[in-house]
Image (cartoon, rainbow, N blue to C red; front, side, top):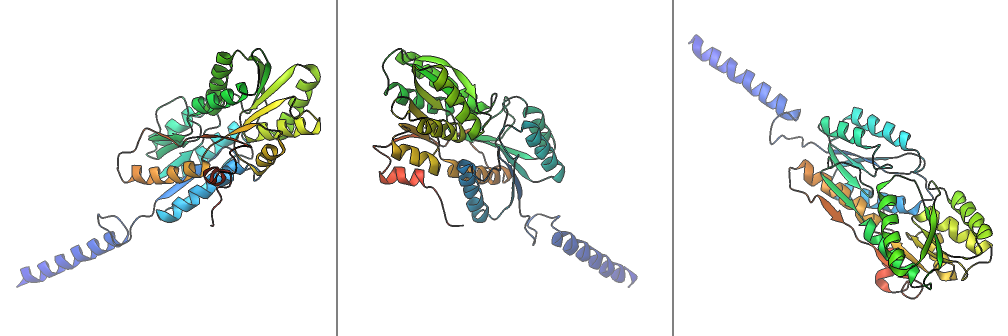
Length: 327
């Protein structure tokens, strides 16, 4: 009966190996389900930038809903492109299941994005894309159309041939390129003269100084379009402090508390409000779907809305201006 003894021993070995491997998560249908790890790399961890704080709210809500572990990181401010590249390299070495990335530069982030994909990491782009189709999905405002909305809102305030300046943020980001293109297209159609584009590097104080210098050098300046939160707030504070509200019209982007105040005070005439909460939430949701081998859209437009002092108190616009959620 030696053969029976060996059969029993063999069965015990197979059972031991099967249970051990299954418990460690090496077999399909395992007892210990793998919990996805997702790294989110945004443009700026600056706490005063409400846009990114609201986006992080969306990330955290989705992380709980889809039961994933999420790490959020980013450079101190949007102009530190090299630091963002270093952080993404660091994330690649840590081997998360997915990286959700808001790129600080349209071209310079391409190599590190390709490296992430080559390492087998799923990649989702949010807010700002890159010059590559390597990402599984791109989730953002249609920034060219949002720029067109801002340009039309400015044109509505002015007569033809009036002079306008654009205060942008970090030169070379996809959002900056598209928004500026949209603004220029609308202003050209309206016959408005654009004096030039000036870059704040995402620093409020620099936008303030640019506005102050422009107003001193050009007494015929009639409008400023700010292309992001810091550029808009810096310009608005300068217009207010210099007593130029009404003389220089202001149209901006985003919906921070400071921008809401500028609208209420009549310093700013309109702002293009995005939906950063949706970007953060959908970034995680789409990453999970991609990891589960589901088909995901190549592009998801999260939308934008023009808000003015006249419509800011409408219920649907109040939800956009104050998109905070309980954590």
